[in-house]
Length: 433
Length: 168
Image (tube, rainbow over all chains, first blue to last red; front, top):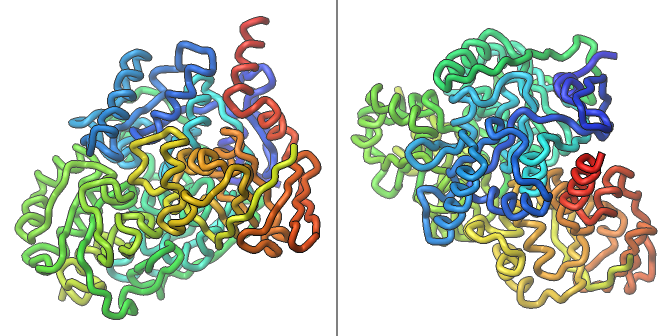
């Protein structure tokens, strides 16, 4: 039997008892130790890693060039405690000579930033102390979130233990309807299988519809694999990936080589799920789970107080272009605070050059510096009791964006922008002629 | 190793925002986090929890973010063990890594009511419910994971290995 994409990449990174690289075939259920290519942490998860790191009895990290630290969650520092956490990470970066430390001014939302800067590449194993590390699966990498202690150990040794996951393959066929993109596909998929539908599994997204999707849309899909309990959300490398990666390598001046892996035609999948996209409308996930997906046209009258457009799910240039297309020449509803967060400084600058920022401000939206901020109820747009937000982020758990009695509805940038104008949840085609 | 305490029962998909809301992630000491553990879904918990108590959840316990603050908050609150139908995988790893015992046992979960007195034998893999008088069995952890647990968590496990490497 052949192997899935996850099995191929993990197998190529397996180390032996002496912890030397010893590639071999692996099967689902195998517990292996594997060498990692990139280790990531941010301003809220790194502090615990840095507390554990000295207990390992080593002074140096395994490779200062393979560690990435991003101050994005509560940065620019939202309070004194957050400032201390960023300062702690900054000191560690200086002390260990970690070149890829991104502070305010250079930083962006990590999962928009790392692919953009060419820091994660096809065929890599990437581990990050952030659950949305699975985003990089869209580049044909095996990328997964872990906790801070795992990341401390990975920083010291460059090695992690992994259980080789079973893979579920999702094959998307049919014709995409207008205003339907990666966010709608992944919300629909999670709606079908549930928030534990891919628990401990690798998800492989494939089929003619995926082949036509842009990288931004693919990154959005892989980003939310974790919301189905998935360990990774992988997409096979094709011409779209190669073009993106080469542009990113140029931008980030990364010279590292990479290897492209593909699943075997006779790979053993635990399950293959076929999804015909032709009937899928723009989606909205109702509180308080991402699995509560339904067509935006069937949302009923949900009155909104806030619309958030951005995040590691939908903070890329293409997302902002879609939002601007909807908001152009229109006004945000007077009862709605519309907050737009470009994912990185590069995205911000390009949005500025393209006139998107002007469109947002003229429409009455607030534009923020890149930050995870409101997505996790940190800062820059917290909800009061009883308030409702539509958001292009990835989670709508109780209290996620603020008060435990507030509500978050998840959608694409198109639906969020249209809803910001209407003041109630609205599909884009009702706002745009 | 035997653990005894009263049960705190919750439903399916208890997420890490429920276990410790993100607004408290500007702190990381277990005792600080424990004060806010579960507060968005259960305001009584932090006040009323007693050392040794046991959390009993449904499917997919600990889903959501990778925050290790979640098992740290639970451990800091004095919880001795979490029993659930299933765990989200990052939470599972984090709990093992920081030395918070976790057990998957749907039979015990189904039979447990809020406040039941439970006794867990980790070595034998048994859960005894005083009210029902029944004992439930769980499957043991894989050997590799038991090695991490036996070493006292991932940090001591790795430290041992690094020391062996240096002495060769």
